[in-house]
Image (cartoon, helix red, strand yellow):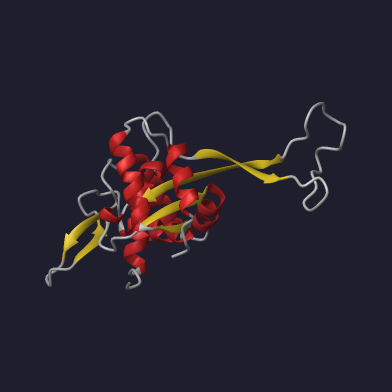
Length: 200
């Protein structure tokens, strides 16, 4: 299978992240807290540094909380871009902020304005070139999606971690969502974890 065009992949990832990055009228965003834990091995590494034997009644815990990290976990569906591959996307807030801090001040200002004032449409839209090729291009119908915003979004998308979802797994998830309107994000993520996934 041909490797995807990296700019097109970054634009597709940015579209998938966009509903979570935006700042809505009530000030809410799509960033969520995610618990980082690790297994405790009483006789091996890592030992549970917070739990000494006999300190707490009952069975000793098997995991410990390392911290809470803010992030976005979502899916890029194969039907949403010309590359026709599905990915699980993970973007951490600290990685986002670090990448944003390396951009020019004008790009940061335009990006923040777009998050607060842009419409609900995606920042990159599918267009057909003169030779009939379909490509994601900057949404020129939204005045807040400037060249600087587009470049910022592509840079941020490049910091996200992507795991390729096999076509059969994407089909299983899609079928589950069709058959169960109440399918939860947790159930979807669990299915992706079981699928494994590979780095692109």
